[in-house]
Amino acid sequence: MKYQIKFVDLTSLPPADRILSERESAFYQTLKLPKRRTEWLGGRFALKQLLLPEPGADLTRVQVLPQEGGKPQVLLDGAPYTGAFSITHSHGWAAAAISRECRFLGIDLEKVEHRINAWAEDFFHPQERLQTDDAFLTALWTKKEAVVKLLGTGLSLNSFDVRFVGDKISFYGEALKVYHAMGEPDIRLEVAPKPQGFMLCVAYAQ
Ligand SMILES: CC(C)(COP(=O)(O)OP(=O)(O)OC[C@H]1O[C@@H](n2cnc3c(N)ncnc32)[C@H](O)[C@@H]1OP(=O)(O)O)[C@@H](O)C(=O)NCCC(=O)NCCS
Image (cartoon, rainbow, N blue to C red; front, side, top):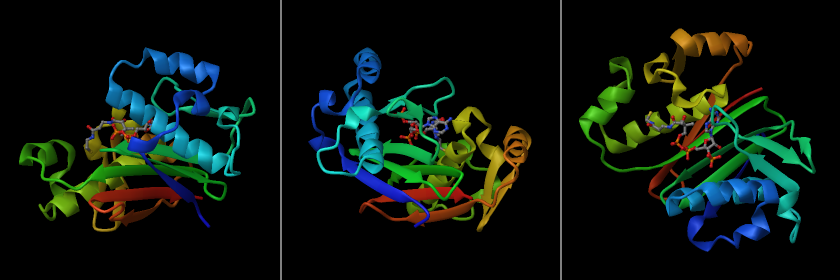
């Protein structure tokens, strides 16, 4: 299996003290917005269950600690986790993915819904806007976010610099520099309409 994914329903999370270590709890307490708190907790719950799948495992053995730049650091029993991982959350769901086979991984989950034209014009290069329907644009959004997570940059990049035309990904500007520095891995994308009403993209490279 190239990667494993775990979805978590954010309406049925266990108490935070069953999920978080002391260090994580200290950060969690600083989060003010209830939505952000629930998503932050849910993403960690999903990732920790993938790393410790045994029933009743002590999830506090895994720590998913925030880092500058956005991509968290993962510690398992205090040592850095060396596999690839990624977290996403959207509208009541969180999901995480891990892989021991792939060196690079990024996932993104988005609800399929109508968005104004200005949004698509801001984020997608004219070459990418081959269709205008909600499912196409949402899938394009998930592909872009999954790839910028795989690159480790997030959208600190210009979103036009990671470009999808058909099945081909092209990199420009800062994104191209990062991609070169990674050794130009062969990035594969899988996009699926799941859960119902959402679009999930997994970007991975060995
Ligand atoms: C990474 C990024 C793309 C996150 O996107 P998002 O849709 O806001 O959030 P998601 O729920 O999908 O993902 C958030 C998770 O991504 C991970 N993440 C954040 N920065 C990351 C980075 N630089 N590299 C890899 N992963 C990163 C974190 O685990 C984060 O969850 P956490 O804070 O709970 O740990 C962010 O850089 C960003 O810029 N968001 C802006 C969204 C936007 O305007 N999109 C326009 C449409 S193309």
